[in-house]
Length: 295
Image (cartoon, rainbow, N blue to C red):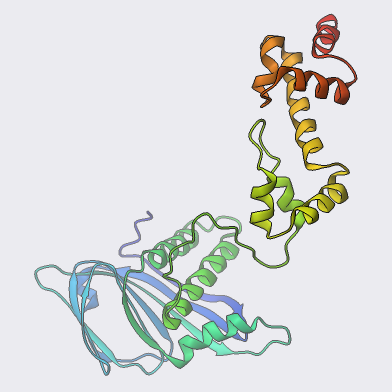
């Protein structure tokens, strides 16, 4: 984690477009605990507050809130607030200020526009937990501090991620656990690319049942796709891959010929022998002998 306490960075020309809104980054910084005792005030822009440790109190027109490490809250334009750091356990805070301006685009992302609009419609939220936002701010400040080639582009990417997180918080979404043992589809599916992933590896390949279940297709549809993309059946594709692996083992001359068939995933030596000769045009012994002469 980048230690950015007592660091202040002012941005003058870093803007990103999210849907129909332009977001401009103004300031990111952290200060010693004493700096975070503030009287009632408001801003003309948005201010994100992230409390990394310590305790304190936040007072807004919405009510009084107890602050502690892990608290995150956003105050938008015109949201009056004051806060006081605890005397016995003063809090460390990082803040980030930015502006949001409507700037409609002809081909903007409606879903993203609606998400960012949540920050406009509800310019105040308070929640526990925000470690992802703190990490993003840390990366933004680190990039600005190093000023390495491409730092603006990387900072813009972190800024976009941060704003999307804030929009999700404001919308009350994003806390659902990641589903397990699921095939997740995003956008238009490239079936050839998806099928290729099932044939990676050397021995253990996905069964037809697994593929049709993951892709939600029928066995007949899978057969058509195998012919379309690979020019062969599923069984022939598996045999091809296993024979290619067997050829590598035979050329390396490390595994005994009698053990190659089981190394590549076959349960019958006789079946392997038939498949290998059909695929390669010679027996496994002949294949090893051929390459032994070349060495």
